[in-house]
Image (cartoon, rainbow, N blue to C red; front, top):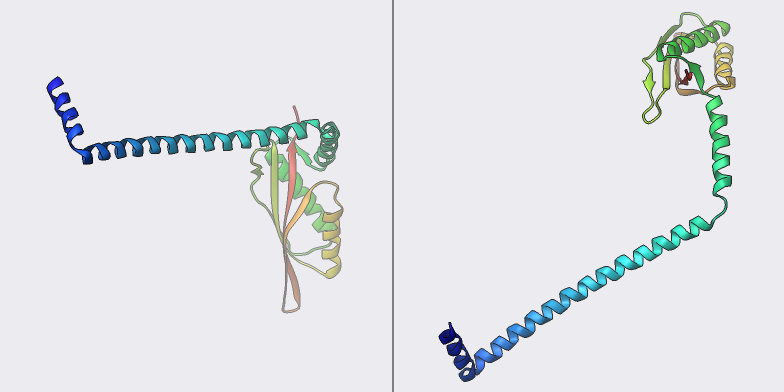
Length: 189
């Protein structure tokens, strides 16, 4: 091993190109290491700046004193909205309740030859115990009867959403298709 090392040292002393090449490799390797360290430092500085910026934002938000007021306003609004849900113990009872109400309003409006179908209840995602009940009504109508039905839907204190209203006139016969949805909350046990 020492023979090989002494041969290498001797060759380095004799050969100028070998010395220059070796120094070039060393300088190039050191430059690469410096560049890597510089990139790492820039990355750390950027992360530090981002963290400081987020901390500043959080401190500004934390010093705002409207949060309790906003929370109470949100709770009051939530309470107002929850009152507008229909109430039922089960989704089946919700369907029956909505069907009965809609059938009563159709008869009050004196609509003839109607076909009322209640679609299956849909439980809202991320909202357990809240169902969307959708109904489809196909019926003959007069302008007064349709107005009376739509007015009953609009004035109802609970949530009823008109998804679609399609009116057709064929051979002097006015017919419509109405798709409405009601939102029910299961009663607490």
